[in-house]
Length: 346
Image 1 (tube, rainbow, N blue to C red):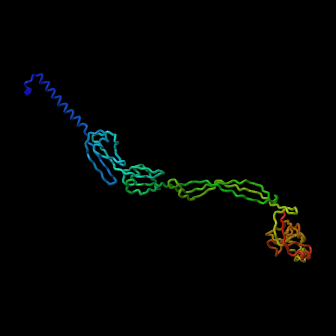
Image 2 (cartoon, rainbow, N blue to C red):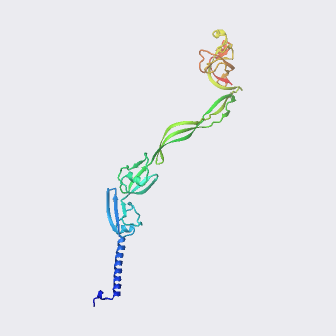
Image 3 (cartoon, one colour):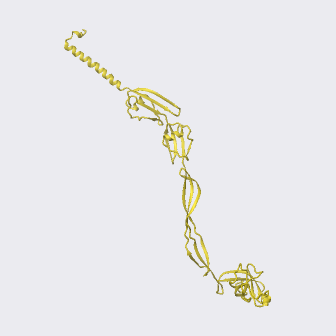
């Protein structure tokens, strides 16, 4: 084969060969430049705050996305880890890709339990990282300075203290008033009862919304109750047809109305002349001037003194005792001492 002598070629052929050479050189240079333009320098940083370590490495790649770069370099990102770029993000020359190593925690707070992923090493920092706000009264278990471990359970108990005012009713009283103008057994409501109202202030402490203590502070009556008033008939009707307000079982004796038999007194303590129908009583039990009816305790079957008035007193007449005045000493002797029923007339 003959060697080509470039210098012996005709002029136009020389120009064609030179042009082809130049095109080839430019193409090669261009292709190399384009190829090199896809090469990127990436700073890859791994931070592990749990172990207190950080690694930085400059790496070259011609890949287009974060995911392709990770796959190319066999870099695994755990479920708990945090990356500053998304896998589908495109990467450019001099990008910084940071992976922070994370751990899972099981957080129980505000009525819910859920898994969260954190990259901070202590409980306090981890809660702040995931946006959990604590008040001064909250309790965190384990403590805030505890180092996070994988799948660590963390419980937040929320405590609150507040003052509350509760309204409670005040019961009314029922007042019963005896009325001697009304027959016993009958009643009339004079005033209907109305309950009152009071406001009571308490200091209430809650744990996770549930009351754990309730302390009394003060109270104030906002509405006074109105008592119910009932008139009760006290007028009694005896077998003899008279009405009375009260009856007493007493021991009865007798005294003479004669002045020489009555200590020389011609007038009783109530200013009456001692005679039949005037009875000596204990004023603490039966007031002087009270109209009475006295008969035997068997309902008047044995004897009856009848209508009379509490008009005298006596040193021996104390409590449920009466002394019946008779006109003669003989009547007093015959009477002696007997059980009696005293009716206090209306």
